Amino acid sequence: MGAAGALLGCNPSSAPETLGAVRYPTDAQIASALEAQFASDRHSAAARDLIRTLGGDKGKLRYQIHQVIYRQGAYEARYDAVLVMGQPGVQSLQALYASMIPEAERTKLPQATLEVYETWLKQQAASLQKTSAPQAQALVSTLDLLGKCYRDKEAGAEVTVMQGLGALISPERKGLVAEKLALPDTTAHCLPA
Image (cartoon, rainbow, N blue to C red; front, side):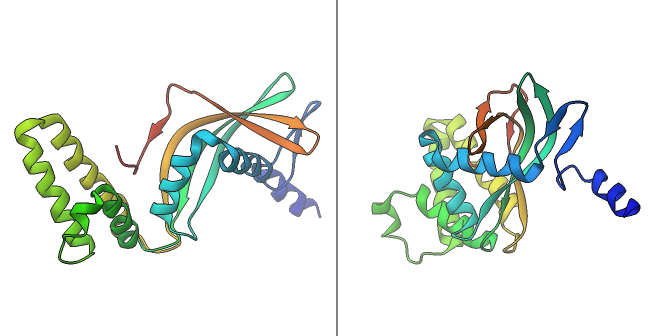
């Protein structure tokens, strides 16, 4: 039991850790509070749709907890959001690119494939170059970034989509509740611009 107990103590997500009189929530408890906040936040509807498009119906966010700080009755959690792919990345790109093309234009395309959608979007970027070079460059950069992030991913692969996130985790009668914190070092990765 001594060796097993020592090993459990090494894993911050295995059991609530107590330091002095402070009992810290587990990573699983924090993740559960973050999931509930994301699912119920009306301001996150577009983000939920994007996660569903990129991850597929079986895709989900996983929260990678890095630090938990006790702050007078509540906890500040620092974490990253990782997308667990529920479908191959090629399928994700095809769905996302289809949503970036106006329906009237999309119905005129010869096929509904990733290659056809990419070609159309690149042609749009080339025509934008004449009228709005910054907008054209943003579209090209987005296509390049998304291709690098998702093209070769298989279902079950993980893609970090946000780093440096923070939330205030507070106890309530039914468990824990999470409130997002705006942190200056939060960065988005592998998301459309």
